[in-house]
Amino acid sequence: MSGWWSRYFFKETINLTKLAQTFPGKAKADSHYRRMQRFISEPGAGSFDSVAWFVMKLFGFLETDYHLTFDRTNWQWGRKDINILMLAVVYKGIAIPVYWMLLNKQGNSNTRERIALLKRFIREFGKARIIKFLADREFVGEKWFGWQQSEGIDLPSGSRKTPG
Image (cartoon, rainbow, N blue to C red; front, side, top):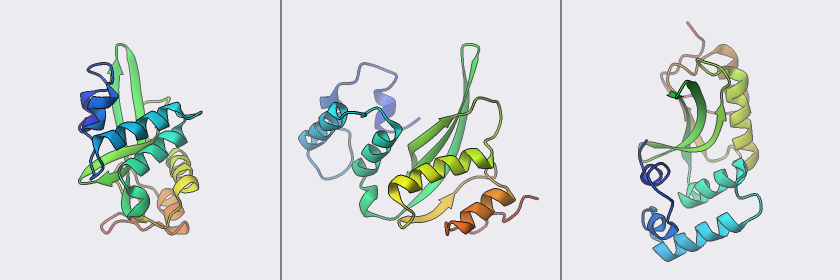
């Protein structure tokens, strides 16, 4: 894990003043601090959609076009397997998660799970700013690619149109 969140999520209690100083952009740390305070104090601030809106606003994704990607991570917490599918916006070569889904199984995600996450994103932010959807070879399948094409979401050059 890289970026500002890795320094705070697992290491220590979050200090908003310190965290505000690590945010990208031209705004002053005080502005970031007030934005985080407003976000935390809003009803429903812990909802997935609120977190997604916070991330999209924080990184300026509402004013620019972007690439989306999926990433799936798998690790063990004691004896428990944790398998998470994340939908992220690509920012300066880093995938910034905006939505995620715990997969109650081992192995890859399926088309239904991917479509559910992407539909949630589209419901909140639309499709107009999506340049392309980028993903590695784990995220393939005729139904998956067919759905993307039916939604007008560009496939990256070099993507396999059908599994094989």
